[in-house]
Image 1: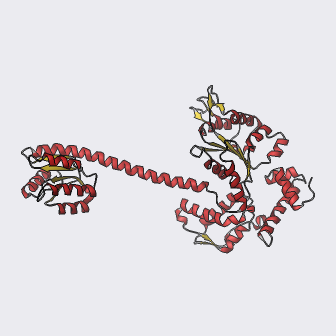
Image 2: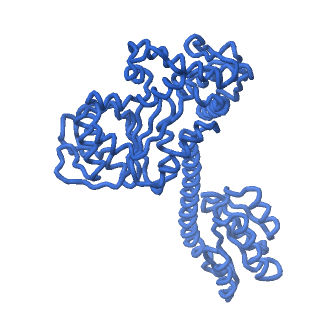
Length: 464
């Protein structure tokens, strides 16, 4: 057990208790007045497991009560047993109200009673300490939860103030309150999942789950099991029941990424769930009902796929209650600087040994002038790689390792550089697609209507 603090102004009582407790195997710190007792509390703190305090210190019971209050103010969970003269029950009751765990009269049975009460105080102390440990553990978990919540928020944060990004977010926020599907369009790496999460967080379902599934990562029966869940024994390896993504998204939002990779048969299954919000697990007989919102995303030429019979038009009509287009990074080059700072901070938090890094002005200018065919994802990978590879705190322009021939943008002004690059993309896609606009749009990962917009904008010839 921890030390026992004994406080009594009567020397003989103090020596008597110290000897008896010492013989019983306890470590005792003896004090003859309140001032010295408080000094011990301040100095030894958590080493003390129990205090035995005389109520009648010095001039009367008030001194003992004052000391009790002072002890509780400094160490609220320290058990205190009050000693009183015979007949001091009323004052002892007052001491109990101030936080004492017990009181004893100084009589011939003091030692016997004290031993029993000390056992009670020890058990009381264990409970106090366990509660404190649990509180500390809870507080630690709370801090960890806040930390990881911050990381999740960091991952979902959309960075930039460009007009193109602002238009995208304005459209996303406008459709967020409506309990209808949304189709997010955009090239690879533009941040379509971030926009989906943004819509979810701005919607009445924000407190519900946000469940994301990449349809390109699964195929056939595996995708069916992933989406609908399965019962035990549904297939080899199905050792137990597993809830699917539809079930997990109940009360929240289901994000379907890369919907262009689903087979037409599976598209039919998805359509029925979206329309009726009912389904059965694989090999299940129970019909489950859910309340969820579906947000889908694709970089495919859905219009071309519908013409070729590769994508169900009724599913497209259902998903495209509202289409939100996420701009490529080349159309929001003014956001590159803010994104670079954000990714540097992100990698520093994840890998503290990286330390603080900064790109030179020339390096930032070159990054902003690059086309980023892989968009924001490519920029993030580049920034993280450079932060990890660069030994010093500064990242220079000549060490970026960019393929300038594939991504440089020419032109005097920002608008000219963007326009020239866009025109070169259209021309190159047309050449690769044999002059066919649908093929060119598919090569670029944009819709036919988007391609026609750029085609007319730049007056590109030799297109069929």
